Every structure is written in C-alpha cells, then in structure tokens.
Amino acid sequence: SNFQKQVDFVRDFAYQFQIGPQDVQVSVVVFSSGVHEQFPLNKYHDQAALLSAISKITYNSGATYTDRALKYVRENSFTPSKGARDNATHIVVVITDGQSTHPTQTVTEAAQLKNSSNTKVIAIGIGSGVAHTELETIASDHAHALAVANFDALQTIKSELTYVTCKTCGFVSKADIVFLLDASSSEGQLNFQKQLDFVSRVVNDFQIGPNNVQIGVVTFSDDANLEFYLNAYPNKAQVLSEIQRIGYLTGITNTDKALQYVRMNMFNPSHGARDDAKKYLIVLTDGASAHPNSTLTEAAAIKSQNIVTLTIGIGTSVNKPEILGMSSDSNHAFTVSSFDALKTVRADIKAAACEEVTTTTTTPMPTTTPMPTTTPIPTTTTTTIPTTMMTTEFIEVPITDEVVVETSAPLMTTTEG
Image (tube, rainbow, N blue to C red; front, side, top):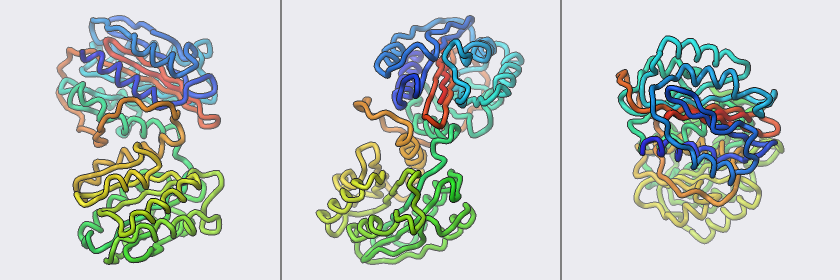
C-alpha cells in the first residue's frame, strides 16, 4: 500500500543514524482525522528496536488534519518528558500527498511550529494532489520543500532528505575536501568543462572558510597537477572563480600517480589540513587507469589514512571494479552514463559526505538506486491520500538526533540531534 511505502521510507531514513540516548532519538505519530503518537523520542534506545517499531506502524483512514498534527508535535513531541533535549536542533519532516482539510489552520500551526525555538520544518509532497503553496508554507523555506511524482518515487529523494537534514544540523560544517579530476585525452575539452561545472555546483552547497569547509583541487593525466591547496582560498567566491580557471591537460590516465600525489601532499597541515576536520577525496574519471594494480595500491594507502574516498566513474569506458576499489566502500562508488548525467549524483555525493559523520555502520539495508534530483512541486490542489510528517532534532556535539514520525495515514517524524 501507499502508506506502507511511507513507513518503509521513514524506516530507511531512520536507519542511517546512530540511535541512542546520546545519539539519535526517534518518535512516530500517525494522523488522519485524529493524531496518534506511536512512541515518543525516548522510547527506543537502539536501532533494532526502533526499526522494528517503525515497521509495525498501522494505517488509520480519515481526513487530512495536518493542522492538528502540527499542533500536537509543537505542544508534545519536543518536551523534556518525551525525551527532547535543550541542546538539540528540532527538525520536523512532513510528508503529504494532498492539501490539508483545514488549510488556513494548517498555515497558522505551521507558522507557530517554525517559530518555536531551534526548530526547522522539511515538507515532502507526493503526487499531483499536493498544494504547492501550502507545502512551501509548511516548510521552513524553499530549500526545505521537496516533491516526488508518486509513492514509489519516495526512495529517490532519500539522499536529498539526508543532506538537507544534515546541513540543517551543521554536520557538514567542518571538512577538508580534495577533488581529483581526470584531465586525460579521453575526456575532451567540453567534457572536462562539465566536470568543472559539477565541482562548482557541489562546492556551492557548502559554507566555505577556514572554520568550515575547505576545498583543494588536483588534475591529472600523465602526471598529477596541483591546482590549489586546501588553504589557498578562504571564501566561496574565490574558490568558485579558481575552479573555472582550471585548464585541460590531455595525456594518459595515470591515476596511480595522482593518488600518490594527493596522499603525500594534499592533506598536510602545512597545506591547510586540520586535525579536527573530516577528510574527503572525490575522484572523477572517465576511463580505466593506465596502471590498475598501482592505482589500487595507492587507493588503499589513502584509505588507511582515514581519508573518505568517493569515486565517480563517467561513461562506458570506466573499470567498475577499479571504481569500487578506489572508493571507501560500495556506498561511496558512483557511475553515470555521461558527463551530462553528472548532475544526477550531486545529492548522493553530498549525502555520502554528510552520512560519514552521522550514520551508523551496521549491516547495510537493501540497496536502492536513488535519483537525487527533486521533482518540481506540483501546483494542483486535489486531496485524497494520507500525508506523512517527520520531525527531527539534532545536536552537534555530541551528535544526537531525535526523530518523531507522524503518519495518518499521514506520517510525521521528528528527530533531535
């Protein structure tokens, strides 16, 4: 059923986080004509128990009284008696497939919820019956309003939701990120420029600076070529400007030499690397390396230094086992069909970086193939299918999340972290 797809989506989202009294806490509330709390934030203190409880949530039919659900969360879900913590950011995720029964009251309640101390609201619309204006009114801002075409497509925005949640909570506030870009002859000038444009779009999503995210870039073909170190440019405007000035090299694909250069030079304190920042290497390549054995050896050496490696293979000439071998794990290995398709993994790349800081390392859930781009929010206002809301709280230090899920058949989750 469609409601079960919402429940599965919430379960998969909650699965990404470390659960416990000092980590992420989750609550679920189901709503339709009435509001029914399934469990409060402080009910489950381990992941297995939480996921089991989410899977047992049942469907309640009725009207879409979103206003009552928002009011319930505001007045009850983030109270100390339910497990809410003062040092947490409160995040509410609302999932709906239609307009609320009482739109005026919904707008009023959404405003009061958003005005609550340290609270952010993410709204997800499903299908053509969603009211565009209402969805954006419920959300904290435009960036927190997402939409999908149908219930089957919910999984396609999991990466986007993860990233929006983590960014809201500040989990990606401090990182040293190095891009390693293939500039060999097989790329061509036009495709190389598409790589640069992709890097610019990813960089543009982060707060850049000495106390936030720092960016370094290396290009390679026959040899590695330094473009700039992590501490070269202290603000976003300078970084974006320098990325667009990077020149195309031509030559063969000596990925091993490039990885060795990164390992020996890019993450040194003298070049801006910080002990308290998470370290990432993002590799983009369109072909197999000239020396595959040496490439895997160098990749292993990088990973042994606690540098998270994400690899993107572009086109039909990539060596998929090599892409996987260079990456930290299968969740950090990506392939796209062409340079034009690079934009489809943008949210996945951001979410993977975010998840490194926030997620647990238990056995992976069944894999999905997410498309990170967000479907434009429909402008129609028909309403029949129940909506879902998730509310979330996060605290930065220690990393702690609390999630309340309300379903009404709509579903709402709240998390604190």
